[in-house]
Length: 127
Image 1: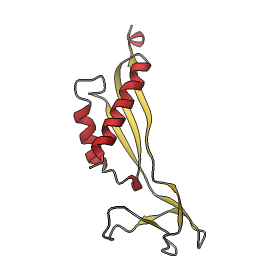
Image 2: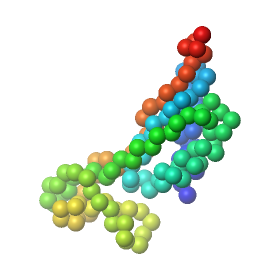
Image 3: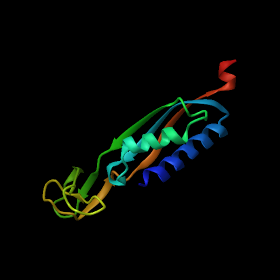
């Protein structure tokens, strides 16, 4: 369950950024999570909810945007959204070309795990 360590890192980064910007409250955080990270968005949100209790981040809306896998195929030249071999029996998803079913692809998107934006309130804005 790598959601816990990722959630912890994200909550710490969000709180640190808010502190550096003199925030008194965090109102929203938008995250980008690639499908190849194998992070479950519901579990990630649940872990973040627990970790942000009793902080200025506690009541913020968390938006998790899942990023599809985008590839470029080395064999047929396809460029676009890929599929994974979810039916396979292994621990890591493997991106394949939807045109020729080859696994020789360059992954262009889908591995991200980013904090895209944080909305905060500052004390001077409420005065």
